[in-house]
Image (cartoon, rainbow, N blue to C red; front, top):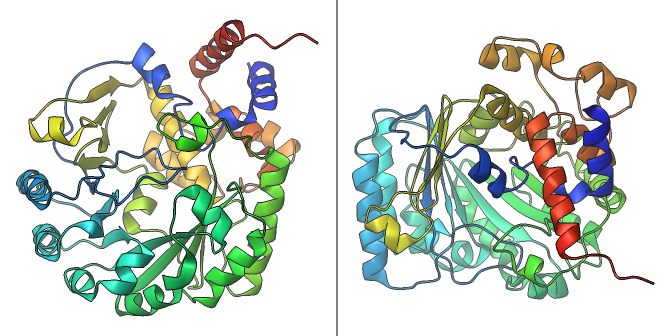
Length: 411
């Protein structure tokens, strides 16, 4: 089994990202079920409205600027939130949640105040820099994350993002919040100077800086449709190492292999929701179109269409075997740069080493003795060790069928 997984990861490393399942079709083929998650420990609220779709994005976004439609959507969110009994941490994502008119945004955030939980929300540099009325509507929000992605005009233009002229003004406007995170993407098309992007973010002095490797696969991404060539794992590793060195020298730290760096000792830099969902494996309820929920063996998505969501149409539901739930947990928790045996034991009642070849990964130099990530370039191989045998077999068949459908040209 290990040999087959490693062979597949070596041949197709871009299939083995932190996202699991490897493709949505895998769960659709194998685990379709029914049911809804009604309550959970964590709450995610999805607001899909965006000014445009960035080329690297495959989220469930909606480009409508119709305020009446937005109001109907917020009505539906608030009604659903009203039926939630408790929430220990909350994320508001999208889309661009702060594209809502201030009165609707205030109403949405206000509906969450009764939980007394930490709230994180996403925004854009343009809104943060130019819309103080929107920021005024965020009373009660603890953390704001703003997507810079790059500082280079060419990379931002290809990605479909506006230029970086408003970045400094945006960060100054956000100082009112307890914590500010900025996002950067490495491996973007047209990104000639990743180090300059990192230095640009450092100069803005946010509390945390998150660096993502750009994905070139997945339905819905313009990049995928344009068949752009993704960087090799070695190229990604070089970019990661370069960014990490600059961030640590500037006082931002994280375990090796982590994506988010914080300048506050003892903090991961991510939202409380994100920590408890990925590190502790807490159950979560998603509200809004295409929002995902997970509790026990049930994993669900709301309908992807805003109009269908507003009409009450159902989405997808999957009943997961235990090994699939474990694979999802382990692969997502690796985004923090380590696997925590104590948290794993608390969540699943067993030892990591009893299920997975941890010693094998340590001996290959992919994990440290304490189960920290040791080699960013070998992450596809490391991740493949945590895929279920069923997922590896499915992915191998999918690759074989793709090769038959699109055979290699002969010399």
